[in-house]
Amino acid sequence: MNVERVKYVIWANDMERALNFYEAVFNGEIVKRSEVISEVAVAGTTIGIHGGGEGNVTWTGMTFQVADVVQGASEVKAAGGALTKEPQEEDGEPPHLAMCRDPEGNEFMLTRKRS
Image (cartoon, rainbow, N blue to C red; front, side, top):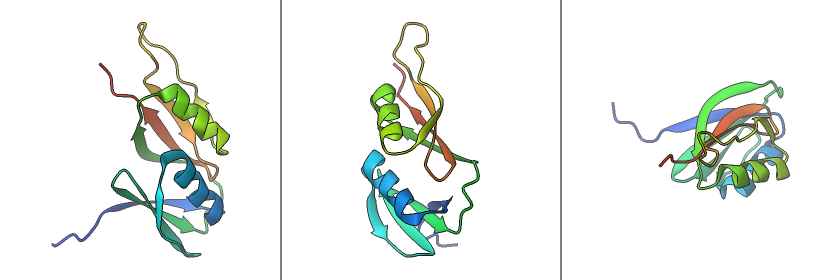
């Protein structure tokens, strides 16, 4: 089988709000825009956003590695997302994990590379 591309698809009740969130928070590049399915490229990975979501909470399995989890969590909240687990120090090191939810109910993690 010749795989042409791999993308991860999430649901959105409000397509524009979802696109704006991933563009603003993760410097995503909107590469396709339609009512049914849109696409955002983040760090070389395509996230498909499918319309028709009902706003249900869904664990996506997506993880975004960032340099500063505390700053990233702040940006998630500022863009209309939420935190389900605040970043916390562990063993005297800066936080390495925050559990987040986008405005559409899709849950994801922010992580920091551990030393």
